[in-house]
Image 1: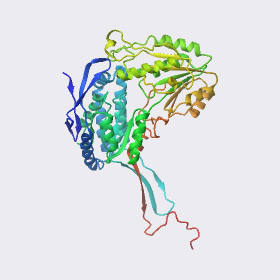
Image 2: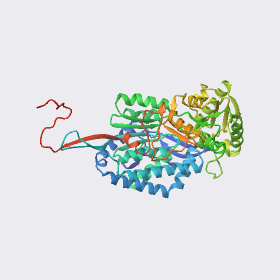
Image 3: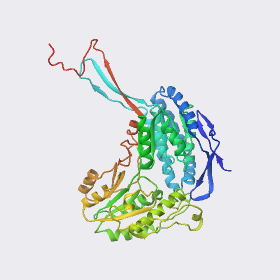
Image 4: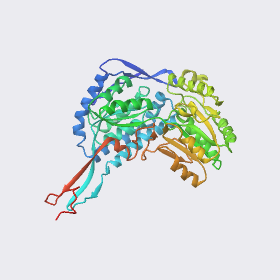
Length: 498
């Protein structure tokens, strides 16, 4: 029997005011309905925000270490339910079970990191310029946080947002992606079981047009955190900016891997295969460009073609499958259209470029691993985010040319270089315009205790992960404590006083 899900508002599971619903289906087998969800409206958002605002008043007074203990219990429960959560995520998102286990593990790591951070959450203590005076800072929560999460990491990214927002003392209203709402709902169940008070965590399902826009427009939402496309991010910045909301945007990428002539080619091969075709290319950090030195260009292309041909495609619940489907038919059509564009631009298609519909895969939205060579800088397939298993290969002669190609996009999220030359590695780390650079590693693979985010059109300067995420969800308060017993005039020139 298909599970019917509800919104979670004020500690209760409730239907949408609209009574409308939508289906969540398995992209590997579109006949399978994973769940039925409420198609909510602005009224549901208003109800959730009103309750979250009231709950915030008591939650913000809970000592931070106590908040951390609750989030630590959340991590414990996720450990116990890891396999169940991973299988659900594979069913609703499609990526292979080994990857969804990793996705859940990232959520677990984030919860445990917050548990530890609950006994730190440091401010700054600094000397005053005046005698008998103490200066220090503390972090204060903002209020109600509106969290809008994507479909490609249905557990990790909600955890990246929800958990630090809660540790900081905010209450939250979550709008998960309509394509993957079930995993986020299970996270809310776990947070409730762990002991988060009623009203502090709320989830409202529905479309960006109705639920997302209502979150942006609501005057009692103090901070918006969004992960998704640059186009939607621009809209969020525009609407929220008029209301002076805090906004964190983690947006697109057009990430590249450079391979120098001295690189370990076998290692570089494994890196680009994982970076380009892991998660079926549906990562903001996916390797969508491969920048090859001319001296190893032909050899490396043959290596990657031979290995990519052997990638096993299928239902991600099968342990031996290496690549699952794309999220839905619309996204598969977007990918296929970019393949047509690549051909029109006269890039050379050497692998893939078609729907994959063998056997049971005919029931889902599968696409072949696809490789274009002889791609030139400025081609659309080299510049625009495709979000699928399509790799563009570009040739270069000198190191400086590779860096120029790397940086010549509107994005700047992740990057990679394979070389044995430590001087070139350090120079690349210095000159690549990206928020993340890997040396002898693929462009994908974030760790929860380090900052994650990018430059240029990849975001608006904030970083998720590590200590940096707490900059999003807290206000800094500076406190001056004067125990001199007299008026002391700071920022007054006293050098001429008698």
